[in-house]
Image 1 (cartoon, rainbow, N blue to C red):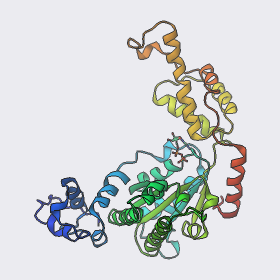
Image 2: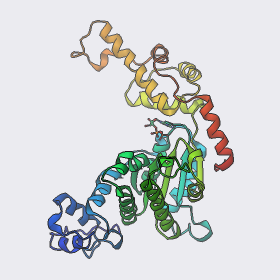
Image 3: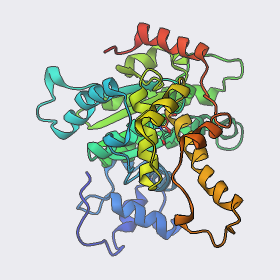
Image 4: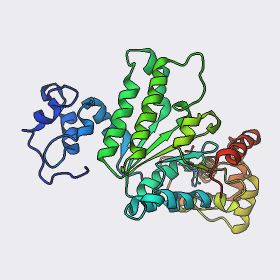
Length: 360
Ligand code: ADP
């Protein structure tokens, strides 16, 4: 399905393929849409069966906006989370690399849930999976599908069509990883008063698509991420067979130290001693990975501010005029960047993990 003909179509058969695509003929299509459809055509110049009844502009949207050819995250960029990495390796990466071994009893689940507080690396894991398994990465935020604007105005049914296009294009780009952020807003158990008919249909469509590739031999993995796992309903839990808790690096000083070192070293700003790092780690109990990143950013402003204080003009400032980041810079930055997750919230994740999580 992912075969791309070495010779570009000259367009002579484009009419052919698009005329089957949701009843549109090629005159009605923009050049960019035609080019995008051509890329998805098989060697015979025909659009794969699954895409024929989909709207070309949605196929184009999925290919250009949702598909990410190079997610740029490697395993080594992610600090800590050893249990999650190990599970993901076994459940996802090996089966994608060796589908011949992972069949029958060993056939992997097709749905993975990453849950935990915000900013702990769930999105990074999704991207790293795609990178490591050499899979095409599709990333969508569920709230963009369920946004009330999409359902209230003329776009009724739009979300469902987009979901169909998403799974359709993914199946032509296998192996594929579909990452759905805030999946709770799509697969929530809450029947709120305001739940619109269209969001119910959207959920049904999503579950149907998942069911479809779950039973088949398709190499598509759905990775859902959520900060509110308790909102997921039973049907969603059933399809997301592996459920991994992605906690704060709070018990993991090593991970916090690693983030500091890694970010500063990348910019050539690292000169902290082991003792300094250990002090910063003690002061950052309860910080998420993303809080740590913001702290490093704030701390690295210290040497810049200091150079300006000494009278160097910003327009004349050279890199060499700035000192490496110090412990004092971190201490100054701490009141500016506080931990974003409260202890109460952590209790909820831990409870849910005990009940539904895939434990180590
Ligand atoms: P989530 O999806 O869990 O909300 P992200 O994966 O988007 O969080 O993380 C946000 C940012 O925080 C990342 O881009 C990264 O810079 C930093 N970060 C979070 N967790 C980690 C981690 N475990 N290792 C390294 N960086 C992290």
